[in-house]
View 1 (tube, chains in turn brown, blue):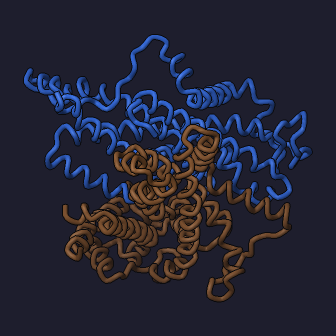
View 2 (cartoon, rainbow over the protein chains, first blue to last red; view 1 turned 60 degrees about the vertical axis):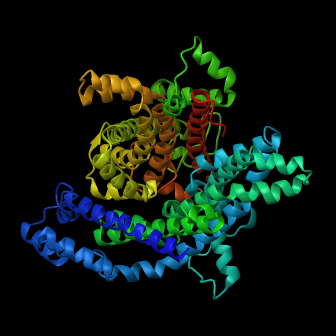
Length: 317
Length: 298
């Protein structure tokens, strides 16, 4: 198992390296350089001198190879440079927002798992009945409803029925857990709905698949209670693909946060990303892209290790 | 015989008479989705004739008006008719959705086929890049592209926006296309074409590509749904379609956010429009897959 773990972690490094190289060159290869886009983007008359000063300030006057070396060394030493907009270290700007986004992500995951596993299993067990149809329609709707719109509807409903608006300032969970949860639950539900829809669909098809297996028929034939057949034989084996989907969607939650944080006015990673894009803050974008890729890679490794733990056959391949 | 059946292309387009009728009978949900899509295309195409008002017509005497006989879905904070704006918004959504999906899926499919056909180092290199691109949520990649590309507006639609939506789609399609093309590459007629001395281009375009049309169409339908959702999200963030072009995402952002508490219809109906459109394309795509490949039981 240790050998497998080490091998799996080493395999993740090329992906991260690829992302680092790709994002570096994407930002440099664009026609017209960053400084020009930033200062002259709106057709403003900016002298060539000012452009050059800005280039020097951002280190863009150096040859590409030394810029690339700086970027790579910075990555290894976890020094992402300074934000081109605020001038603060990028790592600091990200760190102060990470807690909030992370909490929404975890809450959303909990919601998704609590909804998806029972709903998906029930839909599979009652395939082609009205229960199944209701679950399936809810799930397909979950893929269609934009999370930011759902968030707006939540705020509207709160306002109409409780005359209550979510607070503007963020309360950390260790200060006042209830105030914190009251603030975080709606953003988590908004992104969690889509998440649970994806997981529900996967659970349903996975359970359906497993129910066709020979060992289920064997279990039924030897007279095992149907409840035990489902709980012990079906769900356990159906769980593997579901875990993958839950993990991948977790890694991709930043996509939902990008819009949802805007609606709920939460100052998290998603909002920072949008701000950086609007402000052409390239150092920040670079670092955030690396963060997203890092989360994706970590989640993938975690999924694989969990797989190996749950299914010994994978370990020895 | 076993090798034959393993290598058989995973999808086949049914060549039956009355295919459309058969689709409607066997896939009622998909037919419902198709009906919504057709209605959307219709109202977008004939918005000039069908919409009760000009979508840009500002009428300060009718600001924030609730749904009425005159304004079926109410008016917004500028007194503009919500129904008319939704109909014209459908035009934007469909144009961006279809254009970006066609570009993204076609590029992806070609990359996938080339990767599968040549194999070896080319395949390895392409799949490496695809893997890297797949480690990002679609919207993150789209935002990076938006940050990079300068805005070029043609006929009210931003070309950079179409690129931003198309580029994240390509690697996802490339994956599927590669898998399908790998199976086809092993078929005897490809060997025969190679033995006959046909060029790589001819084999790729005449012998392999036509056989992945079915998965391509399935991906395309699903992509349109995603593209509409993505366009709405980017526009909502202020990074997509901009005023004065009517767009659904735009109707949910900006002033809408300030007034929707007094005038909930302002956000209710555009949101329903987005959801319904995405829902319809997803439903149609799902059914299309079931219909083209009855083996998959999802």
